[in-house]
Length: 239
Figure (cartoon, rainbow, N blue to C red):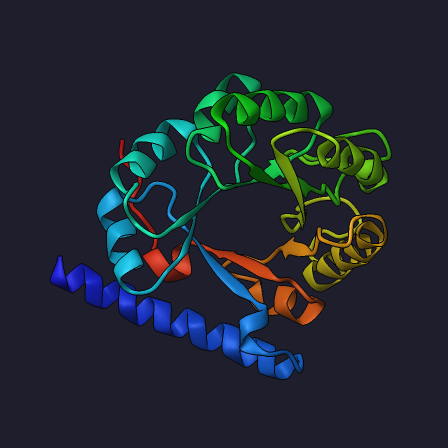
């Protein structure tokens, strides 16, 4: 465990330096960017070590893994982010631990989240997942609402009890006009964020960038980066 803590500390320091360097290059203050460590597939023991190293935001993408992990770490001073595609039958469980759902992409999901947040007596932050590979009326390969649907979905979240509209999220697309053009993709997300904030000024969170492309995201103006393997390492698959 001591070795693992040292490994995580060293990796975390490297990622922190990358973020600091990216902020400096972009003329931004380091505290303008929040690191979210994506702990999916890693055990609760790693989450506990990360918390001890000062990490305050962690993310998961599958409820069946996240729910028991969050319960095991419930006493830690952590904000839990859900970043995976979310089925409505998992919403009740996710609302039980997630402080922010970053993958809100359709009206039916908003309705389900609102119902369960009210039932649980919680306020859940919501990011609209924007699919930059989607057509006008389509969803993206990995979920997400098309850019043209952001305004309508934002209004629905903002008007739903138990929910708080926090901003936008994207994943660099693998197809479409922004494939292989991560900086341009993140720039497009920032343009959409600017438009969103005209109507919803408090929705100023922009979640973009992962281990491979956090620098591009910071350069574009992201407020949050989601980093997994650069902190936790590449986990061997079972089976």
